[in-house]
Length: 165
Image 1 (tube, rainbow, N blue to C red):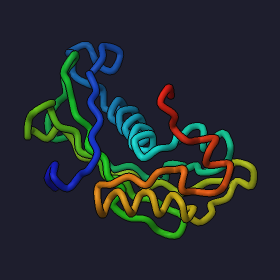
Image 2 (image 1 turned 90 degrees about the vertical axis):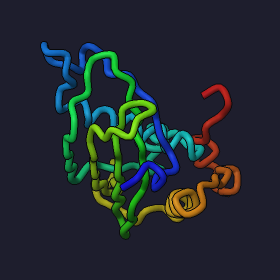
Image 3 (image 1 turned 30 degrees about the horizontal axis):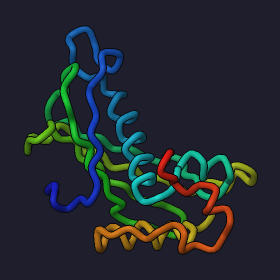
């Protein structure tokens, strides 16, 4: 894929605790980075993913993650994590991530994550909420945001990102 295929990116710095003794990012760090980028993607779209989880409005669990390492990431290096929702099933999302060195075309890793919606109370999956489907689809198709305020359910007001959040 190309960077142009993504409409959202999140910058990060490789920190010392994420590296081995050689100063190379530990393989598990990539999972942390993609989870943070997923959360920031949702924040950019207007809602707080972890608040949605707390209120049982929208939550996902990781079903499968595939990481392909292309080049090492080093301590104190700046990276850009590109994120997109590639596909949505009835109760699943497939997110694609690409990690690049900042301001570079050098691809460090690709990650595909398959997530299933999950209800903490019933411990079962459920259909992707229409509002989430609409938010993700519209953004991925147009690059434009839909204001959360368009959703009438008062629960959405509780997870909406406010300027101070």
